[in-house]
Length: 490
View 1 (tube, helix red, strand yellow):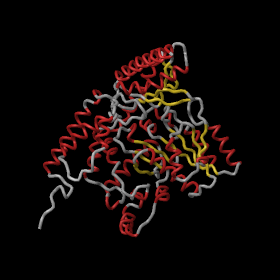
View 2 (tube, helix red, strand yellow; view 1 turned 120 degrees about the horizontal axis):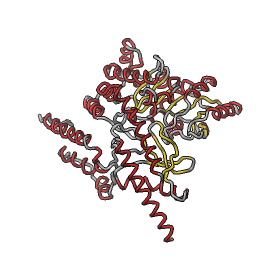
View 3 (cartoon, one colour; view 1 turned 135 degrees about the horizontal axis):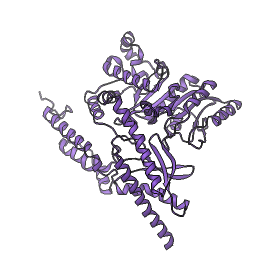
View 4 (cartoon, rainbow, N blue to C red; view 1 turned 30 degrees about the vertical axis):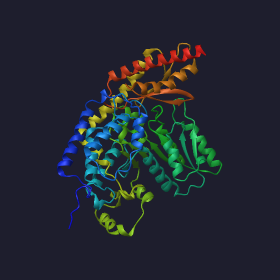
């Protein structure tokens, strides 16, 4: 009788596992200690692109060293580094080594965190981690939640709970309200849930890019008079464009008066709850019905790690629970010991669930809340430093001052030519990507192109900010000369 080889059992020998593991750990440690020496952005050349796409199906296996070498050569060299201290684009994810090792543990032990009897310790850790987040944002003791992949699924799930609890899944005539600064995941989530585009009413933001309560109140009254059914306000704590925080306390008052559900997308901004005085910008967040919070943003976790919190934990099972005969014994065992809220398969969309809570739990225990708090405060200070340097440079217009670690600005030509300012500002992102030293992104505000610096990486230094502002100035001046010269030649 022949025995299956280790390869046919989809396994390596203990020696190979140790060798591969030590090699990967060395790679990660070397990278972590030298991130600032890497270019922030990487270009993908067509030859490498074709090599990757044209690789045939591997019928026979390869040596793990060869595969790891290919990863280093073809994959690692062609990705942008979102954890780089000078990656200021979008909303960066700075990660941390403890969280990465927690992911290795969760994957290595293949922990299934859906049904309490099959992952008891994991379920308890996730409940504890959610309870820590609940305490930080001030939600009541009966609140609960779970970890999901990211803000897209967290917001989708929160809106699904609102649909179930607030209108019992009857979407006829139902209306949801948000500002024009709300992230597109809200509209996409509503579309997935079956709402028509006209059921989302977008309110123009005020001069500070926040959701104006008076305008919102008028819109609700108009819709009620027209026979529609207002049921939910989707607010934001830290918009992607400018870092603006909608007036949460006033919105909570309005939702209470009008019997509306208040959902808040706090993807990155909710992390300001950890700080002593910056959390005042989030007053009212403790009154929400549902809240999304991405730990892989300003809580420094590796992707994917987002949380959905709801005011009453029983709302989750009311929205998502389905039963199956093959799970009857496990369900009964769970109810006898802890109740159904630790069966996370009934609390959200996923049945098969990864143990995402482990990295947040381990990171917070290793580094402590104080270190997290100081790291978040550092992000605020770096944006304020960037704003000060941009103002002092003399050729930047500050569009929105530093708030929630975001500052927006645009180039200001000597002759105040707005068309030229747009061209230079739009081209600056590409010039920075080509340069590779630092990277920032742009967006549109009131029809004008603006650059954004997002400074939430705790390893970003004042020197990084100063050098980046100087670089942007040199690139912008060069771009202005190029465009002016081209216009003259024409």
